[in-house]
Length: 567
Image (cartoon, rainbow, N blue to C red; front, side, top):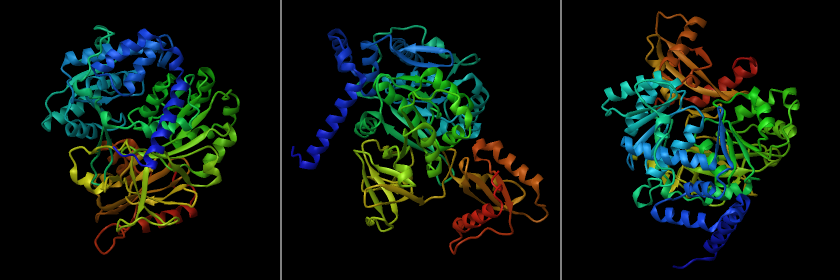
């Protein structure tokens, strides 16, 4: 096999990255011959990927703290034993390699445990947002064809209704597993209370399972982005980790929901070097400073809205010792330059800004100081990424000009599950696009210019307006509507709905509130419009497509005239 100079340089750089990460984890100093032999036997039997590192830490330093969550503290040895027993319990229930298992969970130790157990079994993990409504959950259950559903007891009502709707749609009755007190389901702790702890049930053929993450689509239905873990390269992930001050003594505060793509990925990275996770059930900005001080938190990943909530605490931040923080990562939504300046002014040069997507993984990274020095930048490409900015004819645009951002790396999803047309539209010559428009400066820094689609990002959550418009159109008062995102200092963007009423209906605050409530009855609360504007007509182009650029311009003028219009 011929290797050119560029490939050789990449191999050498990847080897150097791996060596630095192994040195930071101190695994090489801790390993004993017996542990190495035991792990080698398990690798021959089928242990693969990041699960190898998790078990390696359990063998090398079983008493080191792995995680604490809602009153439970688990060492690496205890966590490894629970994962092993859980995998055996799931297999006894009938979960087989390739089966899809839905997770409707708040943040907690259960998410970490079952994700690893499903990886051992070679099953598919389907991450479901706990803020979704029953009909939205039912669609995911049916589309993914889940064999089992694990849910927290607090979500039993949503899970029950969603399962009923999915079964009415033809889904065979899934296995029900409940974490916490609940009826009509297998208790979660029963699955981890028996079975061997040193003989994990590995999937045949080296399978590490897969992830199926549902992200909103322009058709108004969620799209399932499928990632096969066995074919996923860790080179890009390792390259980004090497940029961070991430070490074995890291104490990582989990703030983002674990059903998002970023949060579990960073948890796996922290545990890969032997760090510890601190997992509150939900994010509460008012509790974060005290938690950082008490647990000596060194790192966290947040969406810009969360960072903004922290900055709003003002003097409360100064009343706590936050000196343990080594790095913060902003993800999921554009990071305002003013917010970046505030964070670095109050917490020091510790803020990183990552650009990526569920479908692509990590693409670019801005380091501390770069975002404020180059306002709006999403940083430079992370090693392992090949980025192209293309015009509508598929030609690369020159420096400084805007093009659609396409990327090729080892963490791309295999495509959209059971949606070949959406996969075809997103791919070009092996490169993937989620519809973002960007440009690059002469120094190799990238900047987002706009979004090709109409997607709105509010509080780090992707929202596509079409499903909201479809819901509004089903109300008897509405003849036409358009939903857009407008700038919002708190959420990044907030939703405004332009509505044309049928004759005989009177516009007013009561009807506006009724329409917002009508949306919330079927869709997640974060999809509820913050403002309803009644208009005579919706602007459209020659082909009948809504002119949302015009609506956004009008909305910005309204915001300038009425600064509190978005409240």
